[in-house]
Image 1 (cartoon, rainbow, N blue to C red):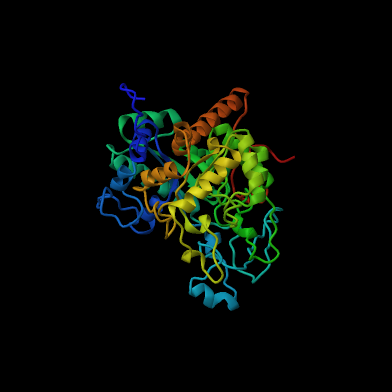
Image 2: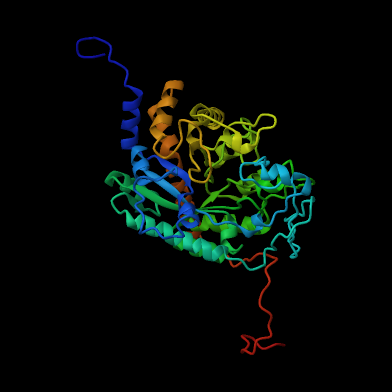
Length: 447
Protein backbone atom coordinates (compact mmCIF):
# COMPACT_ATOMS: atom_id res chain seq x y z
CA UNK A 1 0.00 0.00 0.00
CA UNK A 2 1.17 3.55 -0.65
CA UNK A 3 1.12 6.28 1.97
CA UNK A 4 -2.36 7.39 0.90
CA UNK A 5 -3.73 3.86 1.11
CA UNK A 6 -3.79 3.14 -2.63
CA UNK A 7 -2.33 -0.14 -3.92
CA UNK A 8 1.25 0.15 -5.18
CA UNK A 9 1.74 -0.60 -8.87
CA UNK A 10 3.58 -3.87 -9.54
CA UNK A 11 7.20 -3.44 -10.50
CA UNK A 12 7.57 -3.66 -14.30
CA UNK A 13 9.43 -6.81 -15.33
CA UNK A 14 12.15 -4.81 -17.10
CA UNK A 15 12.80 -2.74 -13.98
CA UNK A 16 12.85 -5.85 -11.81
CA UNK A 17 15.34 -7.52 -14.14
CA UNK A 18 17.57 -4.45 -14.12
CA UNK A 19 17.47 -4.29 -10.33
CA UNK A 20 18.37 -7.96 -9.95
CA UNK A 21 21.18 -7.85 -12.51
CA UNK A 22 22.73 -4.86 -10.77
CA UNK A 23 22.72 -6.75 -7.47
CA UNK A 24 23.66 -10.26 -8.64
CA UNK A 25 26.18 -11.21 -11.35
CA UNK A 26 24.61 -13.00 -14.27
CA UNK A 27 27.08 -15.81 -15.00
CA UNK A 28 27.03 -17.80 -18.23
CA UNK A 29 28.61 -21.22 -17.85
CA UNK A 30 29.81 -21.72 -21.43
CA UNK A 31 30.80 -19.45 -24.33
CA UNK A 32 32.97 -20.60 -27.26
CA UNK A 33 34.10 -17.15 -28.43
CA UNK A 34 37.79 -18.01 -27.78
CA UNK A 35 37.51 -20.80 -30.35
CA UNK A 36 36.42 -18.25 -32.97
CA UNK A 37 39.56 -16.29 -32.14
CA UNK A 38 41.54 -19.42 -32.94
CA UNK A 39 39.65 -20.64 -35.97
CA UNK A 40 39.08 -17.33 -37.73
CA UNK A 41 41.65 -14.84 -36.38
CA UNK A 42 44.46 -17.33 -35.69
CA UNK A 43 44.86 -15.70 -32.26
CA UNK A 44 45.67 -12.29 -33.81
CA UNK A 45 43.41 -10.19 -31.58
CA UNK A 46 45.26 -6.88 -31.33
CA UNK A 47 44.41 -5.73 -34.85
CA UNK A 48 40.69 -6.15 -34.19
CA UNK A 49 38.25 -4.17 -32.08
CA UNK A 50 36.25 -6.85 -30.30
CA UNK A 51 34.05 -4.34 -28.52
CA UNK A 52 31.51 -3.97 -31.32
CA UNK A 53 30.52 -4.67 -34.93
CA UNK A 54 30.94 -8.45 -34.66
CA UNK A 55 28.48 -10.76 -36.41
CA UNK A 56 28.87 -13.60 -33.90
CA UNK A 57 26.97 -14.04 -30.63
CA UNK A 58 29.57 -12.27 -28.50
CA UNK A 59 31.12 -8.82 -28.30
CA UNK A 60 31.91 -6.53 -25.41
CA UNK A 61 29.00 -4.29 -26.39
CA UNK A 62 26.55 -7.19 -26.55
CA UNK A 63 27.71 -8.49 -23.17
CA UNK A 64 27.22 -5.03 -21.69
CA UNK A 65 23.76 -4.79 -23.23
CA UNK A 66 23.03 -8.16 -21.65
CA UNK A 67 24.12 -6.79 -18.26
CA UNK A 68 26.42 -9.78 -17.87
CA UNK A 69 28.32 -10.14 -14.63
CA UNK A 70 30.41 -13.22 -15.37
CA UNK A 71 31.48 -15.49 -18.21
CA UNK A 72 33.09 -18.92 -18.19
CA UNK A 73 35.08 -18.79 -21.43
CA UNK A 74 35.32 -22.22 -23.04
CA UNK A 75 38.85 -23.48 -23.65
CA UNK A 76 38.02 -25.81 -26.52
CA UNK A 77 40.26 -27.39 -29.15
CA UNK A 78 39.27 -30.05 -31.67
CA UNK A 79 40.07 -33.63 -30.78
CA UNK A 80 41.71 -35.53 -33.67
CA UNK A 81 39.62 -38.51 -32.54
CA UNK A 82 36.49 -36.72 -33.71
CA UNK A 83 38.00 -35.81 -37.08
CA UNK A 84 38.77 -39.46 -37.93
CA UNK A 85 35.22 -40.78 -37.91
CA UNK A 86 34.11 -42.45 -41.12
CA UNK A 87 30.90 -41.81 -43.06
CA UNK A 88 29.36 -45.10 -44.20
CA UNK A 89 28.81 -45.14 -47.95
CA UNK A 90 25.04 -45.29 -47.66
CA UNK A 91 25.00 -42.17 -45.48
CA UNK A 92 27.48 -40.05 -47.41
CA UNK A 93 24.84 -38.17 -49.41
CA UNK A 94 22.71 -37.37 -46.37
CA UNK A 95 25.79 -36.17 -44.52
CA UNK A 96 26.72 -33.87 -47.41
CA UNK A 97 23.20 -32.46 -47.33
CA UNK A 98 23.49 -31.72 -43.62
CA UNK A 99 21.11 -34.42 -42.42
CA UNK A 100 23.41 -35.38 -39.59
CA UNK A 101 22.24 -37.40 -36.62
CA UNK A 102 23.02 -34.52 -34.27
CA UNK A 103 23.91 -30.87 -34.38
CA UNK A 104 27.66 -31.46 -34.43
CA UNK A 105 27.42 -33.29 -37.76
CA UNK A 106 28.92 -36.34 -36.12
CA UNK A 107 28.66 -39.58 -38.06
CA UNK A 108 26.00 -42.24 -37.91
CA UNK A 109 28.21 -45.23 -37.32
CA UNK A 110 31.87 -45.58 -36.67
CA UNK A 111 34.54 -47.57 -34.94
CA UNK A 112 37.49 -46.15 -33.09
CA UNK A 113 40.82 -47.91 -33.19
CA UNK A 114 42.51 -48.29 -29.81
CA UNK A 115 45.51 -50.55 -29.47
CA UNK A 116 46.05 -50.03 -25.76
CA UNK A 117 43.51 -52.54 -24.48
CA UNK A 118 42.02 -49.97 -22.08
CA UNK A 119 38.97 -51.78 -20.74
CA UNK A 120 36.40 -48.98 -20.94
CA UNK A 121 36.90 -47.86 -24.53
CA UNK A 122 34.64 -49.82 -26.89
CA UNK A 123 34.88 -50.71 -30.54
CA UNK A 124 31.47 -49.54 -31.63
CA UNK A 125 30.74 -51.59 -34.70
CA UNK A 126 29.87 -49.96 -38.00
CA UNK A 127 32.45 -49.21 -40.64
CA UNK A 128 36.03 -49.55 -39.48
CA UNK A 129 37.74 -46.17 -39.28
CA UNK A 130 41.14 -44.70 -38.64
CA UNK A 131 40.53 -43.38 -35.14
CA UNK A 132 43.56 -42.22 -33.21
CA UNK A 133 44.74 -44.43 -30.39
CA UNK A 134 45.01 -42.51 -27.13
CA UNK A 135 48.79 -42.91 -27.16
CA UNK A 136 49.27 -41.48 -30.63
CA UNK A 137 50.86 -38.02 -30.64
CA UNK A 138 48.63 -35.02 -31.28
CA UNK A 139 48.64 -31.30 -30.56
CA UNK A 140 45.76 -31.09 -28.08
CA UNK A 141 47.85 -29.97 -25.09
CA UNK A 142 49.73 -27.39 -27.18
CA UNK A 143 46.50 -26.11 -28.68
CA UNK A 144 44.87 -25.91 -25.26
CA UNK A 145 47.77 -23.85 -23.95
CA UNK A 146 47.31 -21.50 -26.91
CA UNK A 147 43.61 -21.17 -26.10
CA UNK A 148 44.39 -20.35 -22.48
CA UNK A 149 46.92 -17.79 -23.68
CA UNK A 150 44.56 -16.03 -26.10
CA UNK A 151 41.80 -15.94 -23.49
CA UNK A 152 44.15 -14.40 -20.94
CA UNK A 153 45.21 -11.86 -23.56
CA UNK A 154 41.58 -11.10 -24.47
CA UNK A 155 40.80 -10.37 -20.82
CA UNK A 156 43.87 -8.18 -20.39
CA UNK A 157 43.19 -6.31 -23.65
CA UNK A 158 39.93 -4.91 -22.26
CA UNK A 159 40.71 -4.16 -18.59
CA UNK A 160 37.77 -1.81 -18.13
CA UNK A 161 35.41 -4.59 -19.22
CA UNK A 162 36.92 -7.92 -18.08
CA UNK A 163 38.58 -9.20 -14.91
CA UNK A 164 40.20 -12.64 -14.68
CA UNK A 165 38.70 -14.43 -11.67
CA UNK A 166 39.93 -17.70 -10.17
CA UNK A 167 37.84 -17.58 -6.98
CA UNK A 168 34.13 -16.94 -6.42
CA UNK A 169 34.91 -14.04 -4.08
CA UNK A 170 36.74 -12.38 -6.98
CA UNK A 171 33.60 -12.69 -9.12
CA UNK A 172 31.59 -10.70 -6.60
CA UNK A 173 34.36 -8.10 -6.36
CA UNK A 174 34.56 -7.75 -10.15
CA UNK A 175 30.80 -7.34 -10.42
CA UNK A 176 30.83 -4.67 -7.74
CA UNK A 177 33.55 -2.82 -9.65
CA UNK A 178 31.58 -2.89 -12.91
CA UNK A 179 33.67 -5.39 -14.87
CA UNK A 180 32.64 -8.77 -16.24
CA UNK A 181 34.20 -11.59 -14.24
CA UNK A 182 36.03 -13.90 -16.64
CA UNK A 183 36.71 -17.54 -15.83
CA UNK A 184 38.17 -20.42 -17.86
CA UNK A 185 36.72 -23.89 -18.38
CA UNK A 186 38.24 -26.66 -20.51
CA UNK A 187 35.82 -28.47 -22.81
CA UNK A 188 36.96 -32.07 -23.08
CA UNK A 189 39.47 -34.21 -21.23
CA UNK A 190 41.34 -34.81 -24.50
CA UNK A 191 42.88 -31.37 -23.86
CA UNK A 192 45.00 -32.90 -21.11
CA UNK A 193 46.43 -35.61 -23.34
CA UNK A 194 44.78 -37.97 -20.83
CA UNK A 195 47.25 -36.69 -18.22
CA UNK A 196 46.32 -35.66 -14.68
CA UNK A 197 49.62 -33.72 -14.27
CA UNK A 198 48.59 -31.64 -17.30
CA UNK A 199 45.23 -31.06 -15.61
CA UNK A 200 46.99 -29.74 -12.50
CA UNK A 201 49.06 -27.33 -14.58
CA UNK A 202 45.93 -26.08 -16.34
CA UNK A 203 44.47 -25.37 -12.90
CA UNK A 204 47.59 -23.35 -12.09
CA UNK A 205 46.94 -21.35 -15.28
CA UNK A 206 43.48 -20.39 -14.06
CA UNK A 207 41.22 -23.13 -15.43
CA UNK A 208 38.37 -23.78 -12.99
CA UNK A 209 36.34 -26.51 -14.64
CA UNK A 210 36.88 -29.36 -17.07
CA UNK A 211 34.39 -31.37 -19.08
CA UNK A 212 35.50 -35.00 -18.81
CA UNK A 213 34.79 -35.71 -22.50
CA UNK A 214 33.73 -33.82 -25.58
CA UNK A 215 32.38 -35.67 -28.62
CA UNK A 216 34.60 -38.73 -28.27
CA UNK A 217 35.73 -41.01 -25.48
CA UNK A 218 38.76 -40.15 -23.40
CA UNK A 219 40.80 -42.20 -20.97
CA UNK A 220 38.52 -40.70 -18.31
CA UNK A 221 35.23 -42.05 -19.61
CA UNK A 222 32.58 -42.51 -22.25
CA UNK A 223 31.20 -39.65 -24.32
CA UNK A 224 27.54 -39.20 -25.11
CA UNK A 225 28.24 -39.55 -28.84
CA UNK A 226 29.66 -43.06 -28.37
CA UNK A 227 26.26 -44.31 -27.25
CA UNK A 228 24.15 -42.37 -29.72
CA UNK A 229 21.24 -44.68 -30.64
CA UNK A 230 22.37 -44.48 -34.27
CA UNK A 231 25.63 -46.25 -33.42
CA UNK A 232 25.19 -50.02 -33.78
CA UNK A 233 26.29 -52.07 -30.79
CA UNK A 234 27.18 -49.04 -28.70
CA UNK A 235 27.84 -49.77 -25.03
CA UNK A 236 27.92 -47.17 -22.28
CA UNK A 237 30.92 -48.10 -20.16
CA UNK A 238 30.68 -44.96 -18.06
CA UNK A 239 33.55 -43.53 -16.05
CA UNK A 240 36.84 -45.45 -16.17
CA UNK A 241 38.94 -46.22 -13.08
CA UNK A 242 41.32 -43.53 -14.28
CA UNK A 243 38.34 -41.20 -14.63
CA UNK A 244 37.48 -41.84 -10.99
CA UNK A 245 41.03 -40.81 -10.10
CA UNK A 246 40.62 -37.68 -12.22
CA UNK A 247 37.40 -36.69 -10.43
CA UNK A 248 39.05 -37.18 -7.05
CA UNK A 249 42.01 -35.03 -8.12
CA UNK A 250 39.70 -32.30 -9.39
CA UNK A 251 37.99 -32.34 -6.00
CA UNK A 252 41.38 -32.05 -4.30
CA UNK A 253 42.29 -29.07 -6.47
CA UNK A 254 38.93 -27.33 -6.17
CA UNK A 255 38.29 -27.64 -9.92
CA UNK A 256 34.65 -28.07 -10.89
CA UNK A 257 33.75 -31.39 -12.54
CA UNK A 258 31.69 -30.64 -15.67
CA UNK A 259 29.46 -33.47 -16.88
CA UNK A 260 28.14 -31.95 -20.09
CA UNK A 261 29.02 -34.06 -23.15
CA UNK A 262 29.53 -37.27 -21.14
CA UNK A 263 27.32 -40.35 -21.46
CA UNK A 264 24.48 -40.94 -19.04
CA UNK A 265 26.38 -43.73 -17.28
CA UNK A 266 29.45 -41.52 -16.98
CA UNK A 267 27.20 -38.93 -15.33
CA UNK A 268 25.95 -41.50 -12.83
CA UNK A 269 29.41 -42.89 -12.11
CA UNK A 270 31.01 -39.47 -11.64
CA UNK A 271 28.29 -38.38 -9.23
CA UNK A 272 29.01 -41.45 -7.11
CA UNK A 273 32.69 -40.51 -6.87
CA UNK A 274 32.45 -36.72 -6.53
CA UNK A 275 32.76 -35.24 -3.05
CA UNK A 276 32.06 -31.71 -4.28
CA UNK A 277 29.04 -30.46 -6.24
CA UNK A 278 29.29 -30.90 -10.01
CA UNK A 279 28.15 -28.71 -12.87
CA UNK A 280 26.65 -29.32 -16.27
CA UNK A 281 27.99 -26.23 -18.03
CA UNK A 282 25.64 -26.49 -21.03
CA UNK A 283 23.02 -29.24 -20.88
CA UNK A 284 19.23 -29.37 -20.72
CA UNK A 285 16.54 -31.85 -19.60
CA UNK A 286 16.41 -35.24 -21.34
CA UNK A 287 12.73 -35.69 -20.47
CA UNK A 288 11.95 -32.59 -22.51
CA UNK A 289 14.30 -33.28 -25.44
CA UNK A 290 15.61 -36.80 -25.88
CA UNK A 291 19.13 -36.21 -27.11
CA UNK A 292 21.99 -37.89 -25.27
CA UNK A 293 23.61 -34.54 -24.44
CA UNK A 294 20.75 -33.79 -22.04
CA UNK A 295 20.37 -34.95 -18.44
CA UNK A 296 17.88 -37.73 -17.54
CA UNK A 297 15.59 -37.41 -14.53
CA UNK A 298 17.39 -39.95 -12.35
CA UNK A 299 20.64 -38.04 -12.82
CA UNK A 300 18.87 -34.76 -12.05
CA UNK A 301 17.71 -36.24 -8.75
CA UNK A 302 21.29 -37.22 -7.95
CA UNK A 303 22.45 -33.71 -8.86
CA UNK A 304 20.04 -32.43 -6.22
CA UNK A 305 21.58 -34.74 -3.62
CA UNK A 306 25.06 -33.72 -4.76
CA UNK A 307 24.25 -30.00 -4.57
CA UNK A 308 25.20 -29.38 -8.19
CA UNK A 309 23.77 -27.17 -10.92
CA UNK A 310 22.56 -27.78 -14.50
CA UNK A 311 23.14 -24.78 -16.77
CA UNK A 312 20.78 -24.52 -19.73
CA UNK A 313 22.08 -23.82 -23.28
CA UNK A 314 20.42 -21.73 -26.00
CA UNK A 315 20.89 -24.50 -28.57
CA UNK A 316 17.72 -25.40 -30.48
CA UNK A 317 18.40 -29.12 -30.85
CA UNK A 318 18.89 -29.43 -27.08
CA UNK A 319 15.60 -27.60 -26.47
CA UNK A 320 13.25 -29.18 -29.03
CA UNK A 321 13.11 -32.57 -30.67
CA UNK A 322 13.32 -32.88 -34.42
CA UNK A 323 10.31 -33.75 -36.52
CA UNK A 324 10.41 -36.54 -39.09
CA UNK A 325 12.92 -35.80 -41.80
CA UNK A 326 14.26 -32.72 -40.04
CA UNK A 327 18.01 -32.41 -39.57
CA UNK A 328 19.26 -31.21 -36.21
CA UNK A 329 20.57 -27.95 -37.63
CA UNK A 330 17.11 -27.27 -39.06
CA UNK A 331 15.44 -27.31 -35.64
CA UNK A 332 14.21 -23.95 -34.44
CA UNK A 333 13.48 -23.00 -30.83
CA UNK A 334 12.35 -19.94 -28.90
CA UNK A 335 13.06 -18.40 -25.54
CA UNK A 336 9.91 -20.16 -24.30
CA UNK A 337 11.45 -23.53 -25.20
CA UNK A 338 14.52 -22.45 -23.25
CA UNK A 339 12.39 -21.55 -20.25
CA UNK A 340 10.50 -24.84 -20.50
CA UNK A 341 13.77 -26.60 -19.62
CA UNK A 342 14.64 -24.13 -16.87
CA UNK A 343 11.21 -24.51 -15.28
CA UNK A 344 11.11 -28.29 -15.71
CA UNK A 345 14.39 -28.76 -13.84
CA UNK A 346 13.46 -26.16 -11.22
CA UNK A 347 10.14 -27.90 -10.54
CA UNK A 348 11.77 -31.34 -10.43
CA UNK A 349 14.78 -30.67 -8.19
CA UNK A 350 14.53 -27.04 -7.09
CA UNK A 351 15.54 -23.60 -8.29
CA UNK A 352 18.81 -24.04 -6.39
CA UNK A 353 20.04 -26.46 -9.05
CA UNK A 354 19.50 -24.65 -12.35
CA UNK A 355 21.64 -22.04 -14.08
CA UNK A 356 22.58 -20.49 -17.43
CA UNK A 357 25.03 -22.04 -19.92
CA UNK A 358 24.37 -20.57 -23.35
CA UNK A 359 26.91 -22.31 -25.62
CA UNK A 360 26.99 -19.04 -27.56
CA UNK A 361 29.42 -19.09 -30.49
CA UNK A 362 29.59 -22.87 -30.21
CA UNK A 363 26.38 -23.39 -32.16
CA UNK A 364 25.22 -22.03 -35.49
CA UNK A 365 21.68 -21.22 -34.39
CA UNK A 366 20.23 -20.13 -31.06
CA UNK A 367 16.81 -19.90 -29.48
CA UNK A 368 14.82 -16.97 -30.85
CA UNK A 369 14.63 -14.37 -28.09
CA UNK A 370 17.90 -15.57 -26.57
CA UNK A 371 19.88 -14.99 -29.73
CA UNK A 372 23.16 -13.70 -28.31
CA UNK A 373 24.84 -12.30 -25.21
CA UNK A 374 22.73 -9.13 -25.31
CA UNK A 375 19.45 -10.97 -24.78
CA UNK A 376 19.73 -12.24 -21.20
CA UNK A 377 17.41 -9.50 -19.83
CA UNK A 378 14.85 -10.45 -22.48
CA UNK A 379 14.89 -14.06 -21.26
CA UNK A 380 14.50 -13.02 -17.62
CA UNK A 381 11.64 -10.64 -18.40
CA UNK A 382 9.85 -13.47 -20.19
CA UNK A 383 10.44 -15.77 -17.21
CA UNK A 384 8.84 -13.20 -14.90
CA UNK A 385 5.86 -12.91 -17.25
CA UNK A 386 5.39 -16.68 -17.31
CA UNK A 387 6.18 -17.78 -13.76
CA UNK A 388 5.55 -16.54 -10.24
CA UNK A 389 9.26 -16.54 -9.43
CA UNK A 390 10.80 -14.93 -6.38
CA UNK A 391 13.79 -12.64 -6.40
CA UNK A 392 15.82 -15.32 -4.63
CA UNK A 393 14.95 -17.89 -7.29
CA UNK A 394 16.03 -15.52 -10.05
CA UNK A 395 19.24 -14.65 -8.21
CA UNK A 396 20.02 -18.35 -7.94
CA UNK A 397 19.32 -18.98 -11.60
CA UNK A 398 21.47 -16.13 -12.89
CA UNK A 399 24.51 -16.63 -10.69
CA UNK A 400 24.15 -17.48 -7.04
CA UNK A 401 23.69 -21.20 -7.69
CA UNK A 402 26.93 -21.65 -9.61
CA UNK A 403 28.78 -19.44 -7.11
CA UNK A 404 27.49 -21.63 -4.27
CA UNK A 405 28.68 -24.74 -6.10
CA UNK A 406 32.11 -23.19 -6.68
CA UNK A 407 32.38 -22.04 -3.06
CA UNK A 408 31.51 -25.53 -1.85
CA UNK A 409 34.09 -27.07 -4.20
CA UNK A 410 36.72 -24.80 -2.65
CA UNK A 411 35.67 -25.89 0.86
CA UNK A 412 35.92 -29.57 -0.11
CA UNK A 413 39.37 -28.97 -1.60
CA UNK A 414 40.57 -27.37 1.64
CA UNK A 415 39.23 -30.33 3.65
CA UNK A 416 40.94 -32.84 1.37
CA UNK A 417 44.25 -30.98 1.40
CA UNK A 418 44.18 -30.42 5.16
CA UNK A 419 43.64 -34.16 5.59
CA UNK A 420 47.05 -34.63 3.97
CA UNK A 421 46.06 -35.78 0.48
CA UNK A 422 48.93 -35.40 -1.97
CA UNK A 423 48.60 -34.88 -5.73
CA UNK A 424 47.79 -38.21 -7.30
CA UNK A 425 50.58 -39.94 -9.21
CA UNK A 426 48.23 -42.38 -10.91
CA UNK A 427 48.41 -42.53 -14.68
CA UNK A 428 46.27 -44.08 -17.34
CA UNK A 429 46.83 -47.82 -17.47
CA UNK A 430 47.33 -47.75 -21.24
CA UNK A 431 50.14 -45.19 -21.07
CA UNK A 432 53.24 -46.10 -23.08
CA UNK A 433 56.50 -44.92 -21.52
CA UNK A 434 59.92 -44.41 -23.06
CA UNK A 435 61.87 -47.67 -23.35
CA UNK A 436 64.76 -48.09 -20.92
CA UNK A 437 67.39 -48.26 -23.62
CA UNK A 438 68.86 -44.77 -23.34
CA UNK A 439 72.51 -44.47 -22.33
CA UNK A 440 71.79 -42.73 -19.01
CA UNK A 441 72.56 -43.58 -15.36
CA UNK A 442 70.04 -45.66 -13.43
CA UNK A 443 68.30 -44.36 -10.30
CA UNK A 444 68.51 -47.84 -8.83
CA UNK A 445 70.87 -50.54 -10.03
CA UNK A 446 69.24 -53.57 -11.58
CA UNK A 447 69.18 -56.56 -9.26
